[in-house]
Length: 115
Length: 110
Image 1 (cartoon, rainbow over the protein chains, first blue to last red):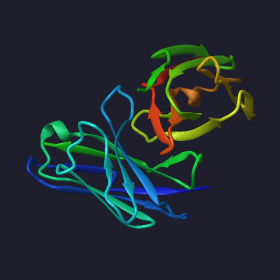
Image 2 (image 1 turned 45 degrees about the vertical axis):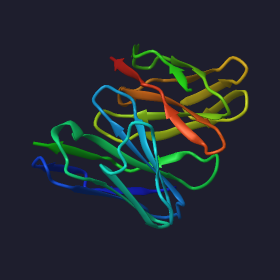
Image 3 (image 1 turned 180 degrees about the horizontal axis):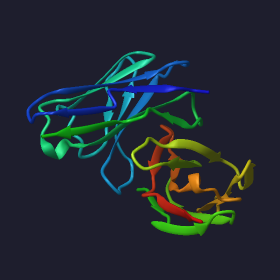
């Protein structure tokens, strides 16, 4: 089946640090990947849609200069949380699908804690 | 906009059957997903319904009524490991945007 790898799984760092999270589709090519954020006891909130070779599409209220997305190849998308602050602490999850009308397959998520 | 409603919590007994309901209101509806999410983990795919009716996959079945904006996930022969959150999600629009409900936290008790 479709496998999505995400790392690191956990990051703890000081306020002001920039953190990069990688999302890879291991056995399929993904022209589109998705980045979600989930706060405790809340639903998955779509942050942005990452498009290979073009700019990401951000959801309303998500700062594109704060959350930099790069989708340089058909198997890799990265999310960089720039100058992270404690309020950015959350569970970040990426996903990819193999095609239109296909389910999204999720990475294992990255738990980000900013001190 | 998108609106998805599902119960926040349910409790059921090991070996029993439980039905988790989901109602939705969305434009450009393509289909409905169900995902399972254990605490602290990423969601895993359970089912995807595009057409009306019931689809069975082992102990899990999912039903969709497009005209009523209604779906349910049916879990049979409940096991303790089924304790998790179950997320209902709509796929809508030409860009196939997926929107998740808040999830139903199911607790299976002995």
